[in-house]
Amino acid sequence: MSATRAAVPPRQRATGQARDEIPARRGSTLLRHLAVVLVAGLLLLGLSYAVEPFRNFQLATVAAYLCATAGLTVLTGLNGQLSLGHGALMATGAYTLALSQTAFADRGVTGGWLLPVSLAAAVAVTVCVGAVVGVAAARLRGPYLAGVTLAVAVVVPALTVTFDGVFNGEQGLSVSVEPPPLGLGPYFPYERWQFWIAAAVTLLVLLLLANLVRSRYGRTFRAVRDDEVAARLAGIHVARTQVLAFVVSAATAGLGGALLAVLAQSVSPGAFSLTLSLFLLMAVVIGGLGRLAGAVWGAVLLVALPDLSHSVTEQLTLSPAAAQRLEGNLPLAIFGVTLVVVMIAAPGGVQGLLSRLGRALLARRPGRRS
Image (tube, rainbow, N blue to C red; front, side):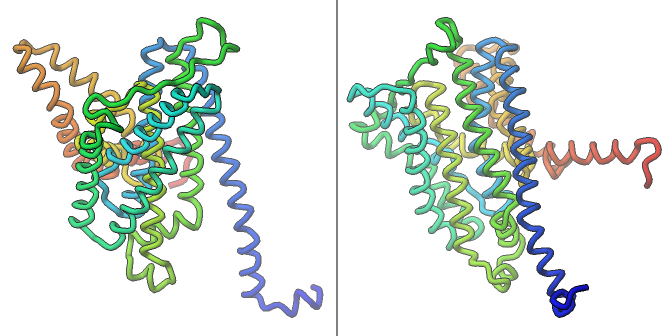
């Protein structure tokens, strides 16, 4: 052993080795996440050619909702902040994109770079709104926090109706989007192009969030969620951490709303009502609170639920007025019943149940040590 190495105390050497191992672990985690994203991208690319255009549109809608549910999972599941206003944050991103695209169209500006710029503008504006709400939310707890976010969910759609000269009231705004590139062919399905856009953006969001969750910031999020007093004693700035979590969640929600505007090619206040905020929260709880994989199940449920309620309504013999009222209220009822059943049968949500089943199957493998 060299004299220099012998002069260093064993504890100090161990601390230095652990400090050196941290960048290596971060690099391996990033590479693993990149590999998962690339594999998922290739699978989705093949899936887009295997399904019909309407299914491509549905998958694109799942991807748009996944941006919002993933961000809400980080906020509520990892940081412990309850938000009932994420539908309003999605509306902020959607209206920002619509106004940006309209401004470009009015000036005759064209090009494939317009949509990324509008998406970036939607994220920036939503981040500003999320920062303002996050600062107020960091001072509140429990029902008071839920009340503030609930007020946001009510106020933002009302503003679009009040300032109808800008937002066109209840009718909303149309969204002009460039057609698919000519290099893809003259008969390339537009729905497949929409799916590619939504999937690419969502995979990037999931990559960033997955690395955020495994980083130092993710650990501080969990520390504040578990015990604010202990986190404060450990030197964590609790309010700053909560604002950061809210800003990250707001950015992904705004991006999800912007993608929905691109898919629908229009945006109106009715598409981002208080019901959507409730659906988003229930979706992440049912999927598995605190897990990004659970956010995927929640997004799938958000898209599958309207089709399920429509199918149930068609099977019943009702008058047109009764069928319309039932179809409007049935999704919320199904969500509520599903939430109760999942919380009783699988408190960890769908992803928690799948994880337990996977561990049970691995434990029963022949030759595996108990």
